[in-house]
Image (tube, rainbow, N blue to C red):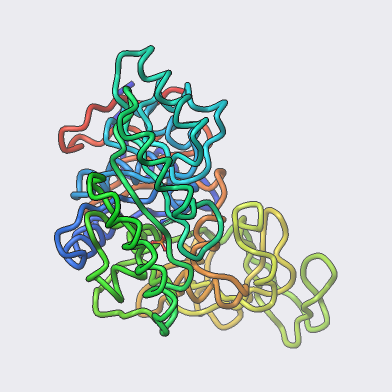
Length: 407
Ligand SMILES: *Cc1c(COP(=O)(O)O)cnc(C)c1O
């Protein structure tokens, strides 16, 4: 159903929401693609596009120049296919044999881990009269899901002439790409090359994630698999920041209630914060059920009227409280920025991650489904995804065949 989205109307009244800046996403796709020396760019949209909303991000990334999409499981691939996305999708995780049929029906490129799985895919492909692309992952030192050379080489050769299969890709994944010492990456890369050299007929080699694109773009090979960089975060403190990335997500809320507290009064479960002076506290309807980690209790801050208001007391499942005593003119319904920029200050996902003892990946991915995603381009809302509405169509989807999802 085509429905024009009036500015704000579709999501107004939601107590917490995530603004998704598609201009920033487009900028990041272009910058990363340029940095990757002409390699194809696979936009990694696993885990709901790191919390940004898989279908909205996939469409925008493809429109901005991404060549392919990467996910981890068949369900994630199906979500994209149901949204009408026809671009090649690589399933990077282990796919059980029982899922081979679905993977083929959805035209997903799987990463083959066994001869049994390869045969299952080939057979389904033949039944359907199609040829299915598959990739192989070389074990080079991460020790999770790759195949060691002595297993991979014979498997690759046995798959090479199997009808129904197109053994298109060979890849590996680095364990320490975001660390300053590149010794282990170099060792993994040499191990990969030793295998790749014996399989010259496999045409798509890929090893680089965001950290590698930023620090070692010479390892971009035929394709790069970028995730966190698309979303505007650097993988770690150590990677090169010469490529300017712009944060895509801002997490926002509004002041739901203001209370005056006398000295000695405390806030939230456990009474872990007590007013030391006459205080004004602001209630925000955002808690760990929305992805605001409880470990930020009494540690993090939010921005109100361009100033920092400390989060006080325990973060609950559905709400938290900020000390707004030092915010002049604070008022009900004031916009509150939990992650993102407001006036001259910014609370980055990295800062929130550091304070809650994790990494930006987990902070972003942890934003839960009940937080509406509000997609903006040129400041205008182009789509909204909530628990009850799928993202509506964008007009320009760069030739993608797309139709609204109606799950
Ligand atoms: C998640 C993932 C990526 C993307 O990593 P970033 O650090 O987010 O760029 C690349 N490759 C594989 C195999 C992954 O699982």
